[in-house]
Image (cartoon, rainbow, N blue to C red; front, side):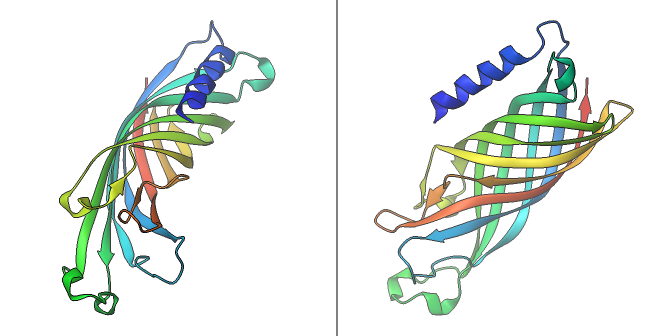
Length: 207
């Protein structure tokens, strides 16, 4: 999957205008993230007791205009993003069927990642842009509450959102992010997988 994503990056960059001037942007995002359970064992109900907690992202964009006149409203965007995603586990006491599992009923779980987005941006107006695409995410760290989980080093994700440009420089936006492949599983031998989702707002600047 990573190999194909790299090929797509180069193909899209080559399709952008050679003579067109690239633009660069920086941004900060703040929002709320959660972990979604997919239980392939059925009936375990080990999760879906997670609630949203604050999350944030720091990132930089590289923006490539397309050279063809009939594609002038489209842009390809890539870059680098650092994200912190967090949720609170609220496992009810009745879930603990074995005494040795008894522990904190509530605890915060946190995941840190580096991401490379591949987004297609459409300009409705000079000041209104919508975008969607995939994000290649590398999970690089977690807090101690994630210690016995099996965290995947790489996940493929979807993102989409809208940006509003002010004076062609300042950006205010909102976006949604979700794992397409699971970020982690509960522990070895249990087919219960977890996916990160995030709703966020953004402020940024385009050079």
